[in-house]
Length: 70
Image 1: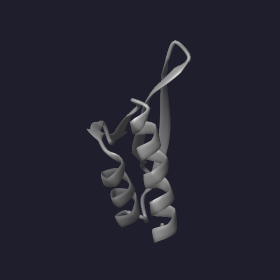
Image 2: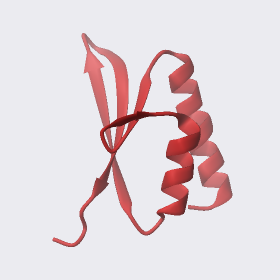
Image 3: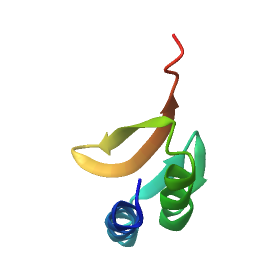
Image 4: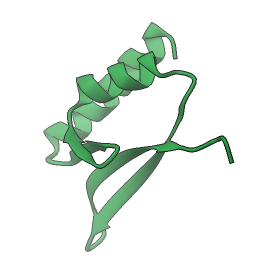
């Protein structure tokens, strides 16, 4: 991930957080800066996004590392 992609991810997640949507990284409550930085540092790893809805409204975004060794 380059700086431009990291910045876009941060802005996207910050916007979601400002709407009251929580951001999670590998099962722990996190924040946009930490997630964008972590995904940038661990570029060789792949992360999957999961969107959690409650009554049709987005409540949480989860980032979980995908095991690519299998």
